[in-house]
Length: 217
Ligand SMILES: NC(=O)c1ccc[n+]([C@@H]2O[C@H](COP(=O)([O-])OP(=O)(O)OC[C@H]3O[C@@H](n4cnc5c(N)ncnc54)[C@H](OP(=O)(O)O)[C@@H]3O)[C@@H](O)[C@H]2O)c1
Image (cartoon, rainbow, N blue to C red; front, side):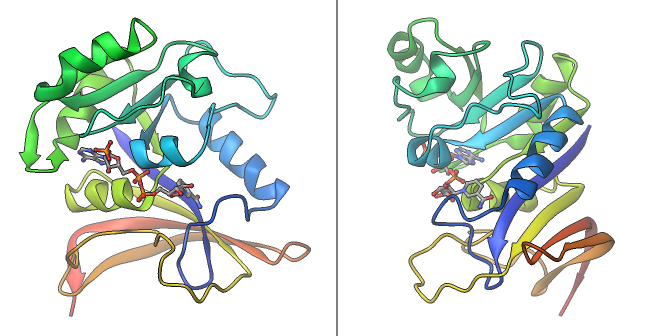
C-alpha cells in the first residue's frame, strides 16, 4: 500500500494554529482525498477541530474510508465525523476497545490493534487492516504526532507539504513531525519529486519521497 502524509506548515515548520492555508491549498487536499481510498487522522486533530474529509465537490464520499487512531479512547461524540457521512473506523488499543464501542454506540467501527510501545499502536497492522478493506492508497492527514509515528514505523512513502509564507515565534505550536527522537542519524533523507509555487498566495507545494533506510549525519 502506498502511504502519503499531507500537511500545510509555516516556513518555520509549524502546523498549528489551524486554518492558515489558502483556498488553493484546501483544493489540493481535497484532490488528494480523491486520489486515495482512505484518510487516517490522529485523535488530537479530531479533538482540536471538526474535520469531515469532504472532496472537491463538497461531498463526503460514501465509499471512502475515514479512520481515526487513539490510544486514550478520548473521542468527542459530538464531532461531525460521528454524525454525518459513512461511519468512520476507530483504531485503538485492546484495553479501551470495549468501553469505546459502548461510548460510540454504533457510530463507528472500533478495531483493536496491537501495541508497539507503551503509547504507540502498530501502524503496520493498521495498514494491513485497511488493505483488507480494499485500500491501496492511504492519506495520513496529521497531526504532528501521528506523522512522527508513521515515519518512525517506516510506513510513509511520500510527503505532500505545503509551505505557507508565515512565521511563528511561539514554541508551543505543533511541528510537522512531533517526536522525541531523530528518525535518522540525525536526518531522515527525502528526495524532491516536484515543487510548484503559487505566486498569488506565496505557497509552495512540495512533494517528497521518503528515502527509507537512507539517512545522513
Ligand atoms: N497544518 C496541518 O496541515 C494540520 C493537519 C492536521 C492537524 N493539524 C493540527 O495538529 C494539531 C494536532 O496535532 P497533534 O500532534 O497534537 O495530534 P495528532 O497527531 O493529531 O494526534 C495525536 C494522537 O493521536 C493518537 N495516535 C496517533 N498515532 C498513534 C499511534 N501510533 N498509536 C496510538 N495512538 C496514536 C493518540 O491519541 P490519544 O491522545 O487519544 O491517545 C495521540 O495522542 C491540531 O491542532 C490540528 O489542528 C494541522
